[in-house]
Length: 195
Image (cartoon, rainbow, N blue to C red; front, side, top):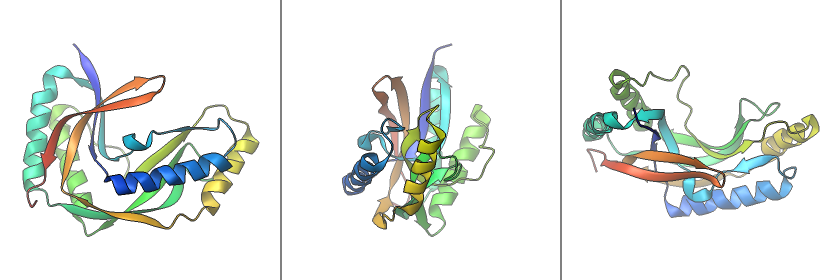
């Protein structure tokens, strides 16, 4: 059975992507060399659900389920700002910029996407939804001193608010992993009911 790697996400406006690229460049200049694999700015998005290996034969059912979610969903507004890392600054693995939702629409959309994907064989995440925008992933086997420097850099950086996003839709996206980084191709886009 042929599979492709997919996820469901909200795209960001150019203005926010430019701001995120600026933050990345600033961090990259200060971070220990070769310590982080930075995400291409045009590839930064707000992931609602990572599906992973997806049977190609199930794509039509996924599209139909997501169209139903979109028809019922309301557009959402969120601000982008603040820097952090998962799991924490002492052991940074992922460097991210935060997303603060205005109202409950974003959380409701994410829950609806989870619920729609469950009967199609994609179980819900085992942890709460923490909306964020991944800037980079810390490389394996970097020296503990560099890891410590990186955590301190992220903790002390004050990037403020980078912008507000008025999300009117979301997309099902294919991800192809390449040595140069992941390449993303939208497979279907969905406008939310109220827009």
